[in-house]
Image 1 (tube, rainbow, N blue to C red):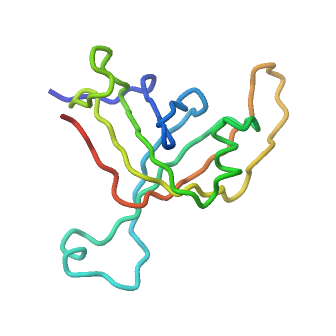
Image 2 (cartoon, helix red, strand yellow):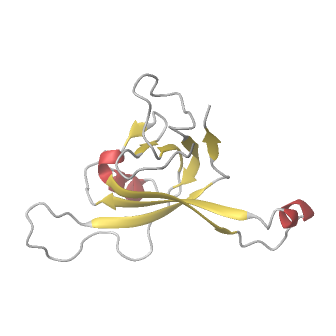
Length: 147
C-alpha cells in the first residue's frame, strides 16, 4: 500500500537540540542535483554520477534571536543537524520513524540566500508576512529512516 505524503503534517527540527521550527516555514523540500566535480569515480559513474543534496526552505522573516531567519543571518557557514518528517510523527511513538511516518536526517551547512534576504512588497492584509527562500547544502546524502 502506498504512503502518500500530505501537505499539512510536515515537521522540521534543527540544531543540536533538534528544536521544532515547523511554525516558521511554509515550504520544506529536499532537493538533489548533479554534483559539480572535477573527478568522478567509476562507482559514481555507475550510479549516474555524484549528487548534491540541499534542504530548501521558505521561512518567515523574523529578526528575533531564536528565529530561523536569525539562524541564517547569524550562523551562516555553520553545520547543524536536521530532521525532516514529511508526514509528521506517529502520535503513539513520535520519535520512531515508520513507512507511514518516514524521517530524513543529516547535517546541513547554513547558507545565506542569493537575492532577497529581508523585506518585501506591501500588502493590505494585516496578517501577511515577508518570507525568505534559502537552500542549505547537505553535507552528505540524507539518511532515510522507515523502521
